[in-house]
Amino acid sequence: MPKKRKKTRKELLKEPDEFLTISSKLINLAIEYKTQLTYVLGIILVLAVIISGIRFFSVRAENKASALLEKSLMKYNIIKAEKMPAEVYGEVTEDFQLILDKYKGKESAKLARLTYANICYDANKYEKAIELYKTAQTEFEKYPMILHQILSNLGYAYEQLEDYVTAISYFEKISSAPEPILRDEALYHLGRLYDKLGQNEKSREAYNKILNDHQDFIYIDLVKERMSG
Image (cartoon, rainbow, N blue to C red; front, side, top):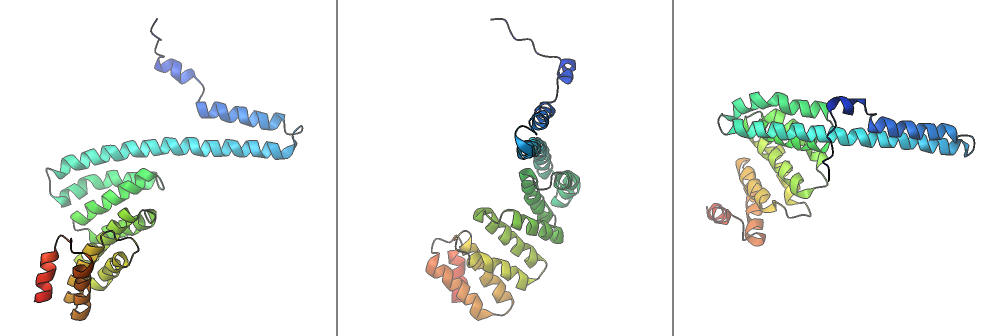
């Protein structure tokens, strides 16, 4: 069986764009049958063109965003193994910011935001990390596993800024959520933070919940030690 000849770049460029060809056909149909099938059909066909166009460009943009994110992550992982967090932040910020600015709303941009937030946190850029985490919080609100991690990271970031009251509010959201994801860790951090604020009763209450409901908590011995002290 003869091998199919691969088209040259020049030949490919001469071929009509797939989306433009489909769009043109649909628009011509809308015009041709506008009188026979009433204006309603013409409007429906035109809307079909618009919708197909949005999907076409949306998929294409998502693919570009995904490729750019993959490239940025590869660069980040290489630099991370060789340099300090502050240096890493300086070298990858432009790459991640480009994805966030150019591909707003795309899934790859959401993942880029979350990764970039972690990079900012590691570099002690807590205010920037908080800004990114808060946006990511709304983007991943339907995914409890990711959402609880974001809430936890917000708690950590506010604690680093010594805003213990706000930090507590985020760990409270995790501990009171219907899903038990990260609840034991949230209770542990609540115990620590309430202790820092001198609210010993609330601190012991949080630790007691761990002792009663989370015996498999990784730091259970430390909790027992704190309670005995």
